[in-house]
Image (cartoon, rainbow, N blue to C red):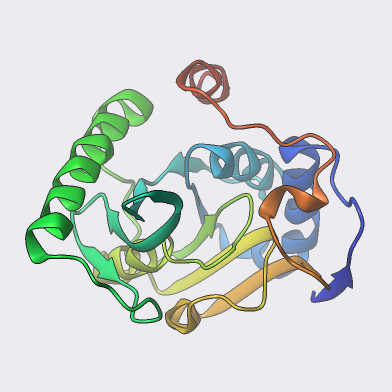
Length: 213
C-alpha cells in the first residue's frame, strides 16, 4: 500500500499497529511469521501487529550513530550483533577516532537494552522463517539495515520491513529486504510523527509497561 497523504492517519502507535496488522494479515498470517519490534516506538506497533497475525513478537535492538552536534541525524547504525552500517549518503568529515567513540557509546546502549528489554535473552530462532521487522515509521531506514542483515545471517527465509508511515527518500540498502510494507507515504514528509495525533518519545518506564503485555 503506497497511499499518498498529508493528513493525520493514526491516533497513536496502538492504532497504527492495529491498522498495519490488519493490512498484513491476509498476506502473512498463514506463514506463522516472527514479528520483531524496534524499541522504543516500534515495539508498541509490533505488539499489535503480532496480535493481528496471531503470532509471537520480540524486540530487536539497533541504535543509530548520531552526528556530533545533531543527534537527530544518524550517519549509520549498530545492531545487537554489534555489526555496524555506515550510510554512504552523508559525506563524513569525522575523524576515525570520533566514529569509534560514537560506536562505543552506542554499543553500551545496545547492550543495556538487550538486558533491560529482553532480559538478556537471545533472539528467537528465525532459521527458515518469515521475519517481519516493525518500526513506528521510516525516515531514512538507516537503523533497520543492520537488523535485516542480522536476520539474514541468522537464516531467515524471508525478511519483511513494515511500518505505518515512511518517506520516499529512504536509504536504498533498505531494499535488501524481500518486501517493504509501508501503509502511507505523506506527500510532504518531514517527520514520522506528522501522521500521528499522539506521538511522544517513550521512556524506559513506558517500555516496562509495553513488555509486560
